[in-house]
Structure formats: structure tokens, C-alpha cells
Image (cartoon, rainbow, N blue to C red; front, side):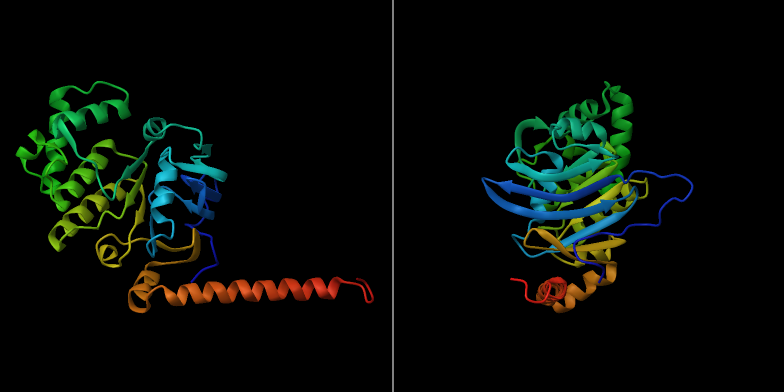
Length: 288
């Protein structure tokens, strides 16, 4: 387990200093005046896969919504730097055009809007140009084949009557068409059977091969059998309390989260004891 509440990514480029793709600095976020994130620090470089794990209510999904600019999630302090640029005041569509994208845990149904029309409008908006129909369909069909999506899928209304697996396939299909530089996946594995999980994971791996960084939020280690992260972070009470490699996910699966919480408490108590000891040593004899 690495140092508390921090992430150390790949080795620095010694010949040229390059800004991280995403740098989160002491981020505090509130929802309806209740503080949820209480000082998150995280650095992600291009092409890296980071997994965030933790109990329900620990702040994982809040981080994803704050990154994409959901209006209910208010950043009260801290920074969210994307390619060195602060995005905290940007609208969700501005962030999307910069290369950020979010796959939802519970995708919303849009009755009356076909999947084909939805995808084309979305891709045109993000890419900033009207893609010719033939070019769009060739690209779309190639990705559908990789994800095991049938042609009749395109004429159905977005997520209307979709199974859990179909919703998640559409999320990954949309991400693949958008080609984001940062893909944020909020519990994409929830509601998936093993076959759908494998297919969706393959789509995520294809994105990651193209220098797309992935921030994968999940409860369970099972998805990490198919999408293997270089970095795993544990959320607890709105903070990252532990970070490590993929072996940390296996340890969480085996031992649960309680041991991480206890080690975090022990570290805090030890740090406080050292601070008190230093303060006492620095106080002159007889001083009050």
C-alpha cells in the first residue's frame, strides 16, 4: 500500500516536462450543502488505467459527476486540472469537447430518440463537424461488431426497454465513437452477467490501447480480471485512503475494506502523536 491519499503514476519524462492528463488537487465537493469529497488528490497520465474502489457512500460516484460538471455537485475548494487547464467553471459540453467523457452507472432512457440519431448528433457535437453519413456508419458498424451489438439496436429508442447489459454496451459504444482522452466509467460492471462483462471490458481495453486514460469506478474486483489497472485507489469518507497496484484489488476482495479503514485510523493517530510530541519538545520549559 502506498502513501495515504495520493497517487504516484508512471516515471516522469526526463527530456520534457509534460502536464498530467488529469490532476486533482485537494478537491472538496458538496451536494445540497453536505460535504461529500473531503480533500481528494489524484494524478492520471495519458494511457493509464486507474481503478477506484470503496464502500457505498464513500464518494466514488460524486468524484465522477464533479469531474464532468454535474450542476448538483458543487466544488467548494481545490482544483481539477485537465491537461493543465482548470475545468471547474466549464460546462459539461465544454469538457466533453476537450476529450472528457462519462459512462453512467444508471443510463437514462430517451423515448422517441433512436440510438442511431442520438449517436450521430452526439459525435457531431463533440467533434465539431457534421460527419458524412457514410463515414459515420462505417465507423459505427465496425465498433458494433467488436462489441457484439446487432444492427436492429440502432433503430431502438435510447435505453428504452433495454436490459442492463444493453445499456452498458451502448455506453461503451458511445464512448468508443467519441474517442475521449479521459474515459470515466461509473460502476459500468453493475447489472452485467459474465458474458456482457467480458464484452464491455474488451471495449474498454480497446479504448485504453489508443492512449485513452481510464478512471474505472467499481465495487468489485471481478471487472479488474478483464480490465487490469496499473493503479488502484480506495475511497473512504470522501478521501483516497490507500493506493497501490492491481494486487491491492485482490487483497480487498479477500479481506474486505475494514483493514484499510483501520490502517488509515492508525496512521492518523500515529501522525497526530508525532505532531503532539514535536510540539511538546519545542515548548520552552515553564512556558504556558
